[in-house]
Image (cartoon, rainbow, N blue to C red; front, top):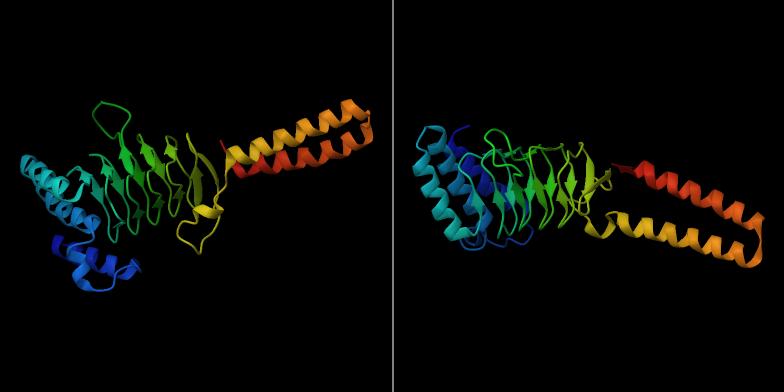
Amino acid sequence: MGIFALIKEDFETVRRNDPAMRSCAELFFNYPGLWALFFHRIAHGLHTKGLKLAGRFVSGVSRLLTSVDIHPGAQIGRRVFIDHATGVVIGETAIVGNDVLIYQQVTLGGVSLSHGKRHPTVEDGAIIGAGAKVLGNITIGREAKIGANSVVVNDVEAECTAVGVPAHTSKRIDDKVPLSHNIMPDINKELFEYLLKRIAVLEHTIQTGDLETMEKKDHELEEVYRTFLRSIKQ
């Protein structure tokens, strides 16, 4: 697909996906992510033709105008939507697939200064929440979701959700809403609630000597704990 066809598709992607857009004129003034992709398509084209300095110049201009830092070497697929975009950083060896949604302040960064592949691969249909840091040569699977402000340093399987610092992975939550942070699992909260309930059972048993109630509650809590472990992929 040619560069101009890609740019045209980028514009159409914003019009199709953003409910906040009221007119085509807004595309020129209110979508830094769109313009960051526009400049990146040009910079990447120059980069792949060996004109690396020219590519870096174009990306530098883009960074000044959009507050988005995308290295010309990064590979970005079709119909990618960078929403709000301010503060997004995408490293040189990052690979972003088709139909990926990236929110503001996201970093697709490296954890090594060595040459070679050192940035993430984000597969088709994935969603990266606001402020998330995806670091290293890892893979975010197809249609996976990364919660806001999560720090991801390990692979995330397809159709799974990763949340937390460092991020833990759970099974997919909702395939109807793009990224429902209000229903995403709070792993730390669930674990603390389990521990508090366990302590309450022990305190009750010490005070009353009621072993029968303790055994019943212990069995219930064990099932809760097993369910919790099954939902988390370490």
